[in-house]
Length: 450
Image 1: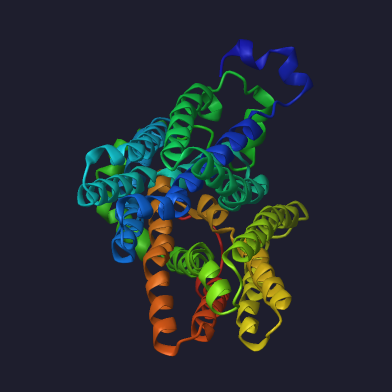
Image 2: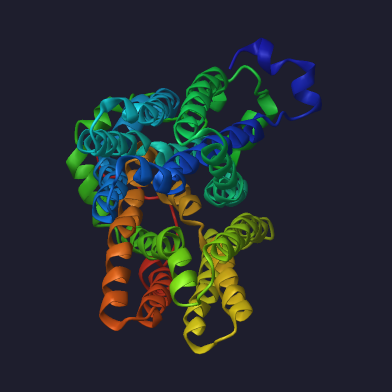
């Protein structure tokens, strides 16, 4: 750091808070990330009416995103560790927004078959482009926040998934109703392209950011923040580390603590994908609500999830500030939250709709409190491979996006009820508890053998 920067009187008087600006930016980006994923859910009915998509074709189109997203996680992690979050994330935002924008043009292609193919390809490409997003978020948080603030920061960006459902779903529904489905993709695509430019102009590593003063930099670094980003503390570029990519992957996949964290994230995402896919159908078919009622009710768990998500991070960081160990501070909200989420099984034993809604909202609130996996990734990933570790974590977690809708569909088809499906979701919440209490043990940063 230059002498002029260190000697600046403003640095001595007051610590800057640029890290909160960075957090606001990744929260906004993650909100758009989830909103772009949901565009097809909102516009699907209008597109089916225009092009004559049947349910089977629509199912394949829906699946395209998740397959590409999962398959692209490890390459995305390698890119993040090789080139850093600033450049890779900018390219990611730009590409997924471009593919979103291009989906507005499929009506120009003529036949329904061509439109189906184009939409499938664009959704697949969008899934691949979004792959670096959450590992990049974890990498940025690990660089910009000390350990005692990392839980709250991770919970805030992770809670953007709920915020997107509350804010953008009604907005996109209004655009579809008022102007047509094309305008959803145009508005979201253009907004995303502008967001990519904003990211490039604002984001730098803490050590390189012109608005970060010496006090904030010292505060972050002394608290465990990796202020030089993807560069190693010794100054050696990560290109050397990446030359042994598969040995690094093997170490990550054979580490007991990380495997427990990865398994837990899969189980947590089972709850996420139940609410994203089958929950409204459950309300209509099993609880005999109207579509309008189901639409309103489905937003309540999202609000509860957002509240619980922020609260979980605050509780975890508060425990650290009170002198509790990192292991205790991270595990306590996760275990308590996921135990609370298992109350979803209670819906099988009640008939009153408001009690069902209350149990579902409570389950999603608990899931929000327990969704501290990204904070744990920032705490435990090797300094040389935060992007790769985060990508493997995200890959495991989003396999649930492929498995959960299929398993629940099979259970409902076989039994004619949702009882088995709700038990399946609740059991996964309990497996999360088992993973953190029995498999993970002590939470600490992994040291690679290179």
